[in-house]
Length: 189
Image 1 (cartoon, helix red, strand yellow):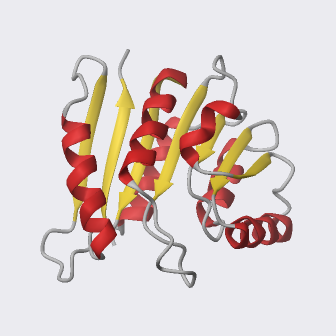
Image 2 (cartoon, rainbow, N blue to C red; image 1 turned 180 degrees about the vertical axis):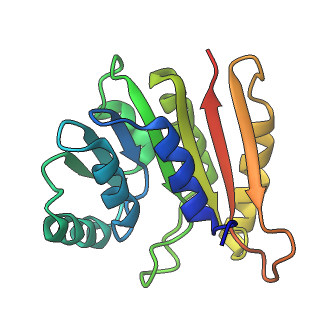
């Protein structure tokens, strides 16, 4: 198929930006799928910072990375992505970041990402992202907290100065049940 799901589209876009040796962020490690993807993209010389507030997510991700032999280039951090400034040097040249918002698949659906912490993390990343770097966010409006997140994040992204940022939204608008959609920010200068 030519058209893919939003997570695969996010990965395809990130691959256009990421090179071997880059520094990247998985802002929500979940079960480690995006973390492993990023670890493979940056190679043995790169570095992936992975954040999650749930110990189970960190453990699931460690297992996935270890099984794939990709745990050496990943720093997993049991903390929210909104605290990334505490873990990543302000002079770090970050090439890309992915946020897969919502709740941990097969986990506690009451523990969800929050729009205010996501905005704080995106703002912190904007200062560390290199020109040509990208931030992708997969947003799930189909659950109550996801609808709130959507209604807060979209207006924030619309305020970003077009001289410094390209922002796109990709969604499957003929799907039922409020499907996830993708927001991608690219730093222009």
